[in-house]
Length: 147
Image (cartoon, rainbow, N blue to C red):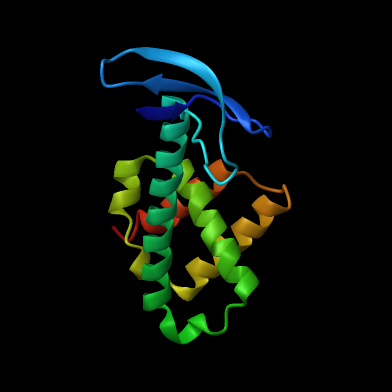
């Protein structure tokens, strides 16, 4: 007999689907021990959002690491806050940039001034003085000359 949790609330009694070897299915209320976790159904929309977020995080981390390795000697002069802002602005840019275009960017060729400019743009976005679209355009302007 298999048990499939349909939904669980804070109570111990939940409706479960019971299947026996004959293929007969019936729903009954059963007491489920609190140490059993029932997974809720995930919609395709939710899966898409999760996939998008994972792709974004991977792409941003790759770009961030390329910048860090290329700017290794100056990297120690960036504050932890500036590093986080750089990651955030790269994420905003990734969201507003065509994927094919993003893949053509050579993040390792960014100069120290380019990185500082991106951090300043990130601060403006954070303060509401600029938009992510502006940041994407600025990065494109910087990097299109370095492709």
